Length: 91
Image (cartoon, rainbow, N blue to C red; front, top):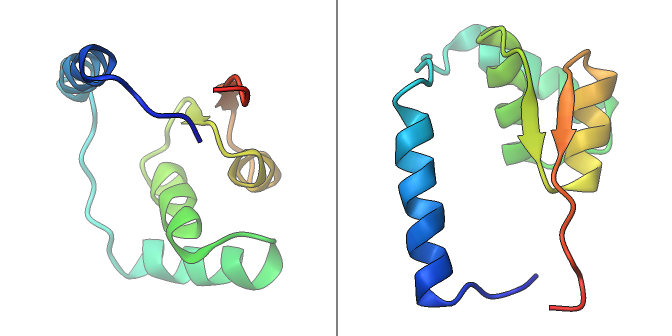
């Protein structure tokens, strides 16, 4: 993983909060928990990744954004449309 310089971190933070205004907030209730358990039991996914994917499914997300290849694979397998962010591993 690369490191952000302060200017880049500030830009990322600004964009995050601008985009968050349009986000739907859902409760991670029993259905999200049960789906994440199912995902973790059936796919090669870490616990927090399974929770994130389950929440996206519950929230009926129109796209799932990630830079994690394994998370992208599982999200696709779970039926989500994935926008995979590529990063330069030289940095």
